[in-house]
Image 1: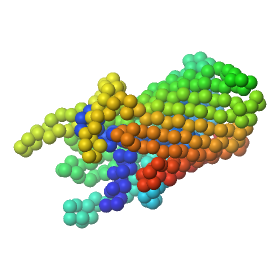
Image 2 (image 1 turned 180 degrees about the vertical axis):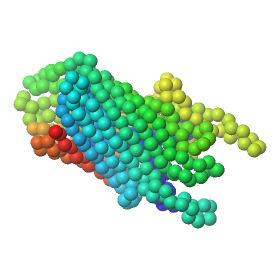
Image 3 (image 1 turned 45 degrees about the vertical axis):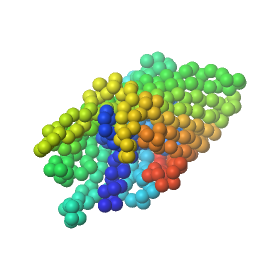
Length: 380
């Protein structure tokens, strides 16, 4: 029962609204929302306007257009570390390769392992065991419009096996699969001066995970993908004329662009209300108003402003060798209620790099408390 409970938490942790009674329901494959690189995670989950390494495939694929080097990186995190379960973990493998005359192409594999689960009947008899996991594989590309502006796109294939073969309410649970598209832009200013030192400004936008809803059972129920709209700004500033000391300040604002609609299903002696995903394009237009959701105790209406999630952070580099990072992430109490401080650091030596991040939640018993991410980078 503990493992089943953990599975439920892991699946729903990054869902925009965990439960809904009206316009929005649970989004599927929420692992696609987990910030994969330790650098961005340490800066309060920011990266849309930075996007200067291989992790740009998550934050902003357009950033690949400004990169002319090759890199491989892997990030690992023991997920929901507070529960002390060894087979809950998250891995992200990403690489980019520059081709003369074509540009930089990137690929990634995202994997969330949810461990072994037990299927038991009402009398607590063991019926079967099964493994739960989710994986996504994708490619991304950035195209430079000019020296300052780039556009980008990404495509990923998603496979989600949560309870393969298990029957729930006479419905067999199957693996779900879908495809998702990313569309983005990134603008980087020419260097300018603040006082005697150089500065650079950048801004970007990324619409990620735009695609058809995912289905796990034989009925009409489909859950929308976690389509996310992210907007970010960043300022790089050299603290000295030589550029040995540099600081970056960044902020991202994001919003889930998903909606469900209610429909009535006849039952034996009445009708029941079920929900199905609104089409992804339609949801882009219908996601800009208030909606009502059930928060576990009562129905609450969220205004448009309450639906935005905000991250802000800073990064200090010394001579491109050592970095210190910090940030803050906030969600409205009725809209996920994740609030935490982030910390991290990074080292670079020749072609090798390592980053780590740490989450300090404002609640000691929060599922994300004490989450650590480690990233290793190799340039070649």
